[in-house]
Image (cartoon, rainbow, N blue to C red; front, side):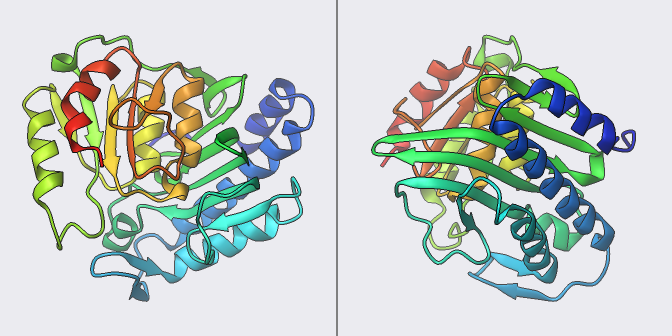
Length: 284
């Protein structure tokens, strides 16, 4: 188990590192992520009331309460609309300023007692044809790891600057991926893409939390990540983490990415073109 999170130390570091209008955004966003994460950790390993949004897409009462915790802290910060997984009726790409929130990424893990889950929070602006993430954080409470980034100021794990890995060969890369919630309806394309990649990489991991996968690309634990059919709250924070750590994020053909695009490749940038060559045929 990692050392306990020193909240005071982290918030002091953020105040010293981030100046201007994004300071309040970062501080309140981090406080919201920590509070929701600690709440989830408190209820981890207990019996949960589970309901289903799809055949294998579940939600627990902890997801709902974690979202309430985050929204209550952020609803007056940044003059932004809140787009959140459990309560937003409209998750379409549209202009404005937004908090994009996944209160508990990895709900299936959480419900089964697998300690790989995290709240994910992003603050962004969207203008015609331009998505700009300004702040993002992903907090893994069971590991006491807070990943956060502010546009132009880098990515951090607690109070330490992080960078993507320096591996430049796909054959030596450890990758991550995930499977969409409708895989039971048609698994052929997802499995085909997995097959093409697994024989080219050193290894592929599938742990079921895209926000954490992206954080791990940012800090160099993974060289790359790919997935299809994700929602905006799955990748909005992670995109900024990767980019501010020196990585690259695109669609399967190398096209400009934003969290409303239904396919993502994220990498340390050094193996990115190799990943595109493998996955471009699976782009819609």
